[in-house]
Image (tube, rainbow, N blue to C red; front, side):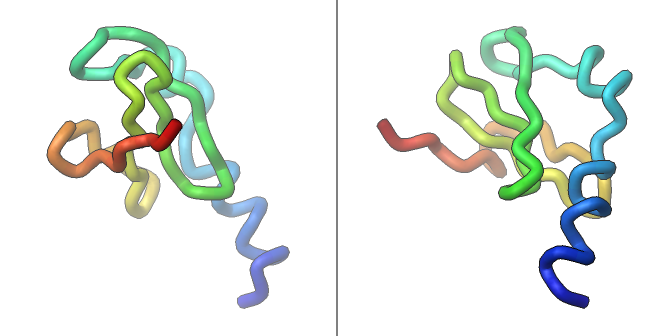
Amino acid sequence: MSETQEEPRRRSQVDPKLLELLACPLTKGPLQWDPEKNELVSKAARLAYPVRDGIPIMLPSEARRLDD
């Protein structure tokens, strides 16, 4: 499958209503969806939580640190 064919699927992996309910487990702050990297980003914690098969992995040990 080409990248352009995958793009709509990636964008739909996190339900907008679920995104409203989810919060960073460290800061309890809001998360932003990054469809290009398939991650939920916590700007306050400077972490990006992966989304695998449509399931957010909200473990700080699984998160990627954001660089400056």
